[in-house]
Length: 599
Image (cartoon, rainbow, N blue to C red):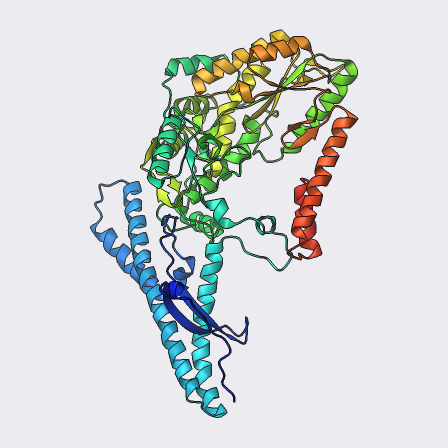
């Protein structure tokens, strides 16, 4: 046996001062037959804060931790005040559980680190004595086996931290494939914000404390409700004819007792590698929409709420019970988040309507309405009254009110948390129930428009009044059809009424209009300009307009423009993705994604 040293680290004097530790580590034999040289450097403080503590789900199988949890929780239950509510008692259990797991994690990480060092030293010491092959085979394999187990643990932790990792079998993970050419730091780190309340709103502030203050002020203003008298809400809802209501039998089914076995079943279905809520146990990653707008403006960000594992289980349970009823309660024009309804149907509707009305020379107008922060503006009093109009049981209404509103919410900015914001209104995105509740909240507006006999909208040739289409919707994206100025005025009336009771805000400057027959109308142009609607699509526009991701051209020139745009996009992607030498299958997945086709 020949022992030799073939690798070295050469450090300059400046870098040598930053050297923290060095090590020679034997890699898992399934990964490599070599050892690896490691060195750790201290290069300064991180620009990221500590963020949320996350419990490692692998520790759940550790018997010492199980024993600590059993002992601690039993002790807590013995001294718990029986007069405290079940919710308060459960919160105490969660806090204690997190405390025990956190303490165990610190001790275990330190123990694992020291064990690896001890085993590596022992292994290297044996090898330096140049033992005979027989002695080496007797002493080294037991040490290697222990190291392999610990290294596998470290690898699993790294995989858990990395979130989404490479999938060799299939290469279908579009998120990973897209992210090959994006640095994770750029996706996670927020460089600065504009202060919307300052005199000079163009200045970008990057100082961490100031950034958190700006975020806190922005969201406190966003989540502060404008007071609306309950009688105004009831008067508004009183003129709407709700076609469907919750029956008594359906109400009882919603309130059925949840047995413990069902809770365990739902808990097992929770993702084991997702991120936790505030208690760190159980496991949603704080994601922001990769907006195409200026990301220094807070209004262009879409924060997703992190909720605790117990809340996720309850959310899924209630969503599962409510989802089958939503298809009955919500009218067919709403295609968002309802089983059996598809976003592509609305795109096809608009395409067919344009084809027919261009043939009929119909001088009408389509409007793509823009709601500002639609989910964040839902007024609790309004939502609860809509639920009552639909005959939801009071216990369910009370539960939703307690769960969604009057919460204290801190906001994560680069790993540092702002002061808490009091959430007086808004449905938190990240909760599966939010989309269903928003559909319910929007329903009165859609019904008021569809039931307005003075509003003509679009009627197919030889169609009956029941086939008349006044608006189609996907979630908060409303596409309204107006035949003439009277229709336009009726639509504005309904939007104004809705804004008053909902706390909503429709941005006219972001609303887009499109001609139904393709021709540009001077009278429509003048009306749109007077209402601050600046985008008007027609056959003379340089490009086709886009609705729910679908391009809708009026002319061959616009269609050719779309084709050229897609081809140029594909060419650029060919150049980018040719570098990593992806497999043919992975390459095909990326290309299909780029042109909007699900892989």
